Image (cartoon, rainbow, N blue to C red; front, side, top):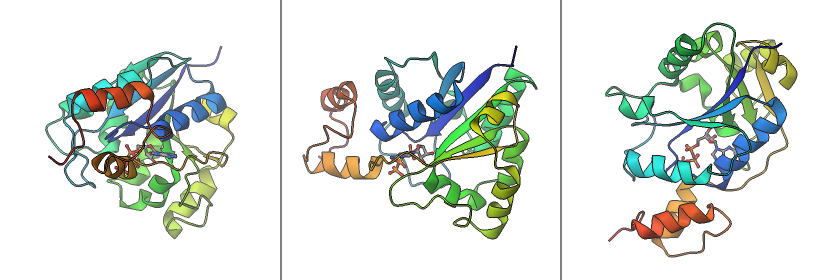
Length: 218
Ligand code: ATP
């Protein structure tokens, strides 16, 4: 029997939206993980201060993934960290928790791959996890778009979803069939301007935002 596979999705989730849910479902369809683990960021070191306290972001995350077909875990380790949030630290902690054999797959959108060379200790991510990178409107996903160094790593590590599922870490799968044109930035702007966000947010998340008066300037 093969070792378990855990699919990780981290993010600001400020707020969680249909792009995040779609990305997680898409990667889950490809990888058939045993569990999906969602890890909201504390204070991401590459972004300006988050608009919303972690308790609200976590609550919205739980609403958005309430009906998920696979088991979901909500992990507050980054929220609880008092130092800046580095993905490498999270992956190290996950590997220590889960052991050497488990397949750990970090899901991300193409915007993150293009940015990968700026991540703290990015080369070492592969010592702990695989990457499953999905297309995102506005960001090209080819082996040539990131820096030459990242492109070299992708070429060297490119593999099938089945290979990621069957091994613990070190591979990259480029998933090129997702096209969800939604971002938290546009949603925050739309909410501030009272524009319609029905297609962009799960209904329960939108209700939560209204109940708690989030993303309003006044
Ligand atoms: P912001 O607009 O505030 O920068 P965001 O919409 O990019 O936020 P994050 O919480 O930063 O959302 O994203 C978490 C993860 O989800 C990242 O890996 C990101 O690439 C991915 N992601 C977010 N939206 C999409 C989308 N529409 N399609 C594919 N991946 C996405």
